[in-house]
Length: 131
Length: 112
Image 1 (cartoon, chains in turn brown, red):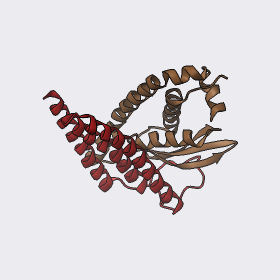
Image 2: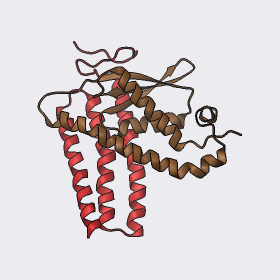
Image 3: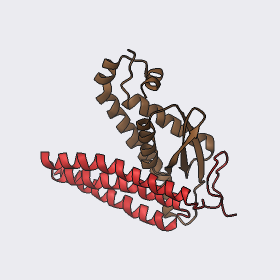
Image 4: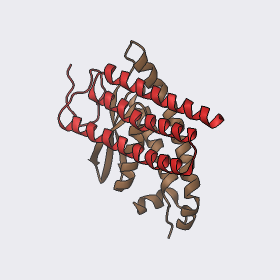
């Protein structure tokens, strides 16, 4: 996990620990916003007669990441209304997350959303480690 | 007073999340959409109801319990949902007609 963090964050580890509470808080607020934003589509689909979902399964490449990272991303994806993690599969040298999405208009948007969530997660919870 | 009101509002919103999830469970067409609906509600709905309860009764003991309950609930409901979804894939439950599974191997075939 640490090698991966270094590449992405590139800050000294002590600074990572110092700013962790703030970054975790920002992540929590952003995620709460995501939940609210994506709950609208589910609400409308569940409460109106027509089926409005455009279900798809996408394969999100994660690269070489650790178990904790995959776990955290899968949990966030599943807690977001309309998306569900289906499992982890090998992908080249690393792993990929299978994500079931119900309200993304196309696969590219779904992939971009999960990739953005992954970036936010890394920024919010890792301590980096330049040493 | 204002905390009590906010607590009540959150608890009602939480209950509404459960109602919508129950409707989703009944109306959505495949196990995956249904699991998605329930996993989200079990996480977000319980959090809203418990935080609402904490706001109605804001004491150190209550807040501690709620923080613990929220953390455990968010993680376990998601893990439960993922485990059931994975079991559904492994046991060959098909996706609803029209599900786009292009580019993903090893998933159950759709019924046309």
